[in-house]
Image (cartoon, rainbow, N blue to C red):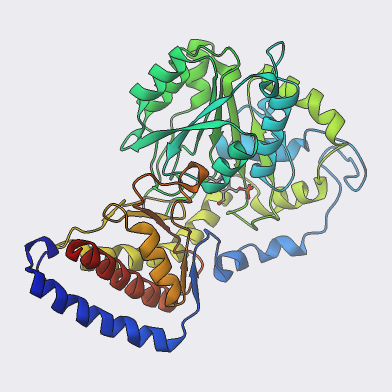
Length: 420
Ligand SMILES: Cc1ncc(COP(=O)(O)O)c(C=O)c1O
């Protein structure tokens, strides 16, 4: 097919008329497809059904887990996550069912009480956060809720624009943190290089209580290729900056989203400080679910086998999306996309000023995509280009149709822009 940029006005109009015919045909079909959220599909959820049959409640140390207690989680759960993530078990707190909840709580505590003898963030005139973009909407929504000023940091091939991060952190004491998804990032699939991790560990920060929110949500969630993330704790130890790390992980996309187990990991100081605060918040999280998770996942090896099964289900779906993008836009570069190795998303960029339009055209045809702008703080994508595609939940047939519609909408919106 001819590249749109080489077409005459008449050719473009002709092309648009053809596309409009297809558009109108889909309009009559009254389609109802949702490609908006990164949710596992039923087949993936079924992989963990055995967990529902586990009804044990006595720990390896013979503690009756039906009762109150054990604030920071049962030992066998710490051992399991220590094994999976290669973090010392003494530096792990097992929480409830959600990392987002833990992130929100950590920020609330820093806002109200502050870290150690630093001024609580809520008493400062302003707090700024660095936000790698495109990123995860719910992260940005939390930061926005607290009134923090968010600074966009471009995602790069190696992770994030570290020159910019280093410069800003060195100069501005109001920059209190950065929120990162270091592996198979949401939505770009970016994996931080060793050098990026090292630079984050090493960099000078004007704020003494600077925090790196290390949301390793997709730590073992490969689709095409297993990528090893450089150990941030190891890097920080070298520069004595361990206290800046707040590491999060959950089993939401290993077993059941919202029914899994979340963890927070940090330095000895961070764990001690967090436990002190937690002791006011709760007597202990759901230890029965922690035990069920341990009995089900068993160890790293077994967990990785489960992740292979997830990958087998996800791969054909990612193939559909990526092949459709390749087929439609390889020789007609009006859309750019990232080639993820894992995670839950494919991030695409339209020509400037078209993302909102494309998402609303898709909606008109019954295909719901993530809201345009959602991958940026305040849901404002300055160039209005980024769209997050989430292939996991629909069936392959639904996905094919959704992608056909998506490609048609991108083409029509682009021709309209060119003709204008
Ligand atoms: C980067 C990231 N962090 C956190 C979450 C949610 O995690 P949880 O279910 O543990 O709250 C998601 C879910 O999509 C995510 O993409």
